[in-house]
Structure formats: C-alpha cells, structure tokens
Amino acid sequence: MADATAPKIEYGVTALGVMASMAGLDFVRAMFAGRLPPPPIMQTIEPFDQTAEPGIVVFHSIPGFRHYNPIGSVHGGYAATLLDSAMGLAVHTALPAGTGYTTLEFKVSFIKGMTRETGPIRTEGRTLSVGRRAATAEARITDAKGRLLAHATTTCLVFELPATSPVGS
Image 1 (cartoon, rainbow, N blue to C red):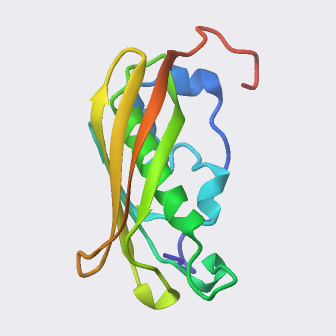
Image 2: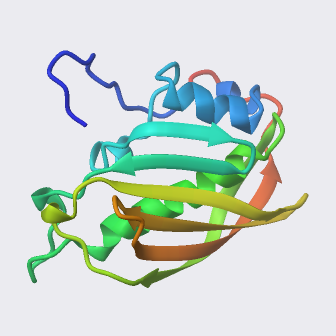
C-alpha cells in the first residue's frame, strides 16, 4: 500500500549473473525484502506483505480504478498477472542456484469479478511438481473474507542458466 513515508521503490531487472548465483528461494526473498529490485510489471500491481517459503509465495494487493476495463470492472489481465507471478515465483523458490524457468502455458478461471470496492486481495502460489525440465504450480486469489476470486494452473520450462553472462546482464 502506498505510504508517503515509505522509501521509493526502484523497479528494475536483476542481472542474470546475480540471479544465477542465488538459490531461487534466496532470490525471491531478496526481491521481496527490497535487496533486489522488483520487476517493472509490479508497478501496476503494487504488492505488499510478501512472503516466500520453499514452493509457496503469498502477496497482497489492492485492485484500483487504474485496473478497470471498458465495462467498469477490474480487467482480467490484473488477475492473470497476479496469478502468473505467484505461480512463477513459487516455482522459482524451489530451484537451485544456476537454474531458471519460464512459463510455457497457464490457464485462468475467473470466479468473481473485482472492483476497487473489493479491497485488499491475497494471491497465493504453490508448486505442484518441480522436476529437472518442467514444473507445475497453482495459484488462488481470495478477498478479505476468504472468497475465491480466481485461480490458475501453469506449466513452466526449467532450464540451466548460462554459467557466465556478459557484463551488465
């Protein structure tokens, strides 16, 4: 949540060499703690109260008017971004140093629409299976009363990151 006394968040992309040198859980925790920059896509989400454990990530956000679509409710892309991020980060927490991932596919089910009156929402991602070449995960978005708003599943490709990367990567 926006706080006038909070330090300004610097969004960015972490150098590949830095990411490759860290276990996934350490990387995600460092990002959540502000020791590494959150990715630019999070400027639109503004997550808060973020936690990461092996195979599980949780973060909160508040849908706002800036997320609205032309029909007067929060755009499905907002929920899809939250769900994809939570599932990907959950997979990342289960990977050893030198390993990366990318989403191959995901399926989203929208259960209940969101508006700015929805208030704070919780997104939780959990791994289902993490192998040498593929990982699967699921995520859920719930409101403050625990009602399910959307859920998703994903398949991610798991791969070895280059041992060395160009300067500035």
